Image 1 (tube, rainbow, N blue to C red):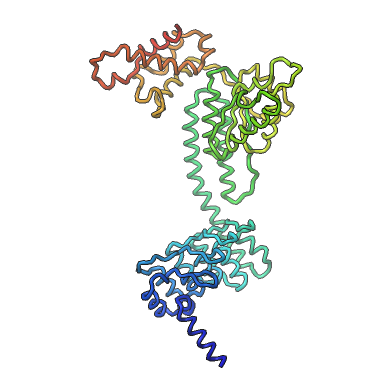
Image 2 (spheres, one colour; image 1 turned 90 degrees about the vertical axis):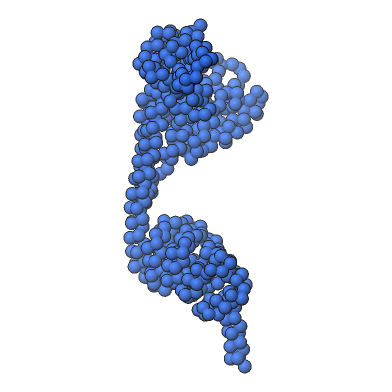
Length: 480
């Protein structure tokens, strides 16, 4: 008889652990686990679901709790996925099983878990609410801070699905809108603390750059602007992304152009202008080939290497020959390759070199001044600034520094060291070397420290302390 056949089929189904989970038969489920603990995460043949999937999707809360708190040798797979990529929480959400969803979340189920098409539990709970006109499960997920702004693989948020559905969803629309506003306010408050910390780190890094007030002022504007952009986005405002600015650093050798470029990479990455902090340093020989057809690929490789960070072209004027000749110079080809990618937003380019020769580069390409919008002039360092650089090198050390472990004597104030540099060097020497004067000065000073110490010296302070006498001897050696 058909009736008896259906009965046997239903009885057979209930005999499985999945059948017990579906029917709410806690006694039968517990008995089967005692007989075979490995059934805890057993997958069924239809949808590859575990007993927890089935219990959650049928809102059998007692079984959900039992499975989550099971004390056997097996451990429950809380984030197990079925054939559609759904976790037990997804199953509870899409079937409107609010109580089961709450129990799962309390036990650590992920509100950010994604199905195969990128939907979160909140997406599925919204679909249930639209079909059943029941917002309870949506409310439960929102109370546990489910993110209203997450997009599925179609680029839609839960609210987008409500808007697309049309009539009959005013209550659900209002609920989601209210939580979106609350979450945005909470994110903005959290951001405020993060932004203050980022600005503090930024300002500390800026203090390590000597001089260059115009550059510091511009960097401060960019940093503050980028942090405000983050705040705007945290509040849900849609704004255009900023493209990295291209620059020209003009000045003599030793004025800190390369050092500032390296620091700039870290600073702009810190505040979100650049996705990485890498600085790819190149010269003409890294870009220009010797034969026809070599320059383009060679330049493009360096551009690719620099993507996401800064391409720093030192002595950029060497790309443009001083005098025109009948033969095409490959440096112009390299410059044209670089210019062609500067509007893409993939890299930030810094051209560096002497002021006068750099005019050739500026004049060689009509689009140069349209793309390179910031020109910074690196003046020669005065003696006070040179003294500041020396003190920074001695105070901001890591294990790779040649002066790691050494320190300046307390008598070596910035003013006294500046006076010493003024007295022991010529203006031409300072103009020619600038900050490049400091490393050889300290190397010579350390040699003088070793020379004047007696082998019998056991005083630890004396063994690592560079004095004004050592600095003076170092400058005198440099002049000779």
